[in-house]
Length: 208
Image (cartoon, rainbow, N blue to C red; front, side, top):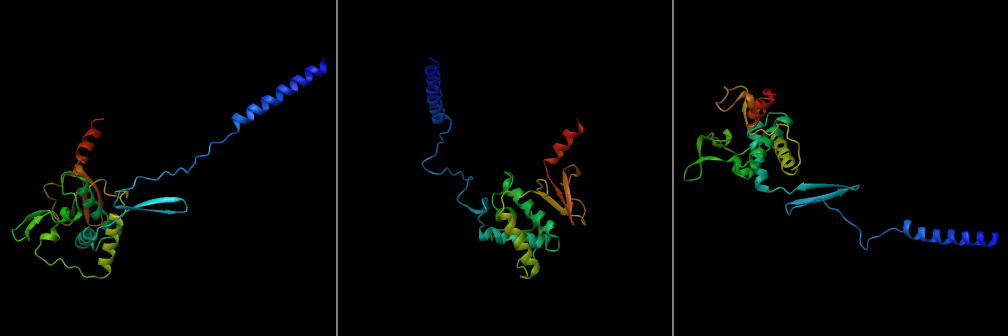
């Protein structure tokens, strides 16, 4: 009788082990590898190095020329940070609904004659309507300006060191009427930067 009981228990353990091995050790393998790609738009390119994927914005040549000139004429003598800040103000305007939605349109915004020439001193960036020539000297300062322009335009996720500034002015001129101290975000080299949303932010903070 004992032999029967032992044999019965051994059979039960064997079948239990078979059932468990069929349910707990089975691994699901998909027919095709699962690939999770970051969202990519037609004007972007994706590169993968050592398993890390980076998305770069494709740069339009005309937009690059406009941005390069804006950096060159506004900040050629500034540091890399100063050049970068001018470029980011331009991009903040592009992203804002209060300004045109392209780099060139933002930079050339202002009153124009019927001939297409800008009205002197009636534009957003002074170099564009100061009555002087707009052909940069293609030396080191131009190359540096173009390099910063390409970097900004090709890196849509770049951190904004101006904190969303849409305006700036040189520190060696009298403050314009729009230069509200409550909207000031940062000073870099010879430029002081302003974000119009900063006024409300500081008001809210002082009420806490």
